[in-house]
Image (cartoon, one colour):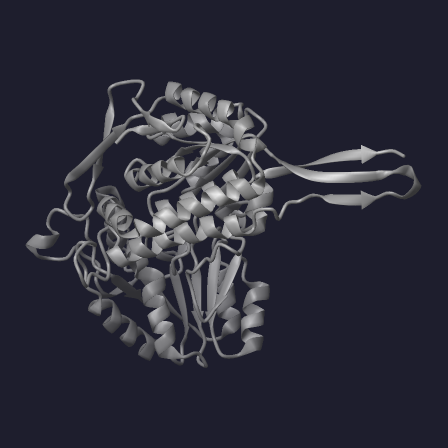
Length: 476
């Protein structure tokens, strides 16, 4: 599959290609160009040529284009979901949810088109002021492999509605659905060059986007180390940044919570997408009075998850996205066991069987007796491993929840309003769930604190971040 520049499929500037691998089988399913800095220049030129045409459309006209695209995505959601599962690995029902989520995002922004109408400020006898908002210009986006479609929507929706053009780099392991969605957008009225997709490595394509002086805003989702590098590269020019850099989300369960509901929430919150989600439950703190029962049920439910190819009916959890991702998890588990920093209640190994031999599978894993110095609690574990830590009270739970350099999300499971309020007030995170975890509707701002990044995705907050105010002063 080729890149998209100027509204058409584009040949690469060289003859190098990147294989796209099915994580469940290890088979190559397609190839995409290994883009270069010159390809980024071509995309920026196309975005620049398209900007004034796209900017002149009213926000309502741009919203209708997004709405039409959402309708086609809904019509084709099954085929798009199969493509997403084949390149990413997640179960088909999760891919369907993600494709529908992309349509939801486009529909949300279409629904608020016209929200930025400007304002008249009466200044009295000296005159009046008209404050309007205008697009920034050419924007850049770099999206990850774990939720490539949803996160594409988070960036494309507000950027295009605000009147910007966009140069976007998908992850090299999951570019195909992004390219297919861009083809759909190009068929419903985007000015050619409004949305350009350049495939290729982060160290070439990603850094070229970050450094380019014509790109006025860059939105990046990925890990902290790469985010730091992107920030350094972007510092050579004046551009706005949105950085979503992951998290180590805590889940706190108090004794008055519905235990069965909380166990189900922990299973879904940790093992959805094989644990490869920024807002996944990564550290589970359970009140010691219910910890034994909770751990027993958690172990049973984890062992009941059906591991397999995401395209197979009945699969609960697919493979990890790559061999590298699985190797990272295995190294961490081995360190925990070698250092005696935790007890594996279930999982901890690759599954046995011929059907798992070629894919990047790893069993759902639950770990107890975890020491505070363990990497399971001190970093972001991007895989199906859940550490369970008993705590004596809410004070301790909140202290442990905040024992991280991240601050993306957190959840509290309780039927006590005061307890929920304390968690909201005292946990350092950008979003706090009560008796739920993981869901992020397009209407609400999403982003973190500390090393979880800068800025917010979603909602009116994201739309405003893709525009700037401009004021006309009128004298009488």
